[in-house]
Length: 250
Image (cartoon, rainbow, N blue to C red; front, side, top):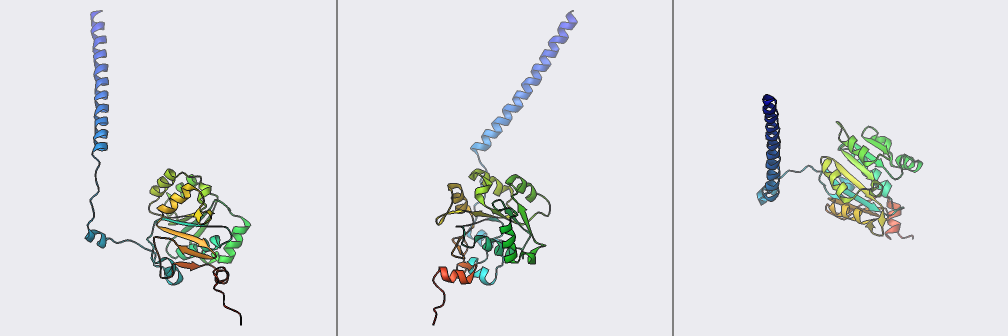
């Protein structure tokens, strides 16, 4: 009887000791977490020389593209917005053709999908010329797109049309951007007048490195990269009429 009591007592002591050890470990982890919170690791400040020595990869645009947007940095976020009927889709496909010179491009058509209008736009833009470097994604949601971008040999550049159809909050956008920091993400937005439609879209526009407003068949750079001209002509004849630059009749 006494032996059993001693064994039971020893077991209780062992269990308490183990429990106390677990508690001590958890307390230590909590203390470390609180210390890290109160003592954040600061990144090293960069000197002017450090900044000047930095090498950034850019898109070596030429001709009209360079005149409009200079040599923008690869990766990050670009933002394109404009009202319907101003040449936005035509511009995006022309941009995709140009970017396909530098990497694989995917166009996630959340709004139109693989519709007849998209097919017609492809034919007009001559997308068959870049068939090996370009794919259309038919309404692929953001979770599916994120999984695709995480795979080996995934597209280097993706157009997401439109931002409103992603149903993302700004926090979700930031998380998506950080998750795919090695890609160029081009978000397309509907417009409300001259601004992107919706407060979240406006916030994404401000966060983007290259902002492009499509109006009157011109794609106009609104920052942070500019060429000598500052805009790209999507359809010259229509742009000349819109901007009052059509030649006078004799």
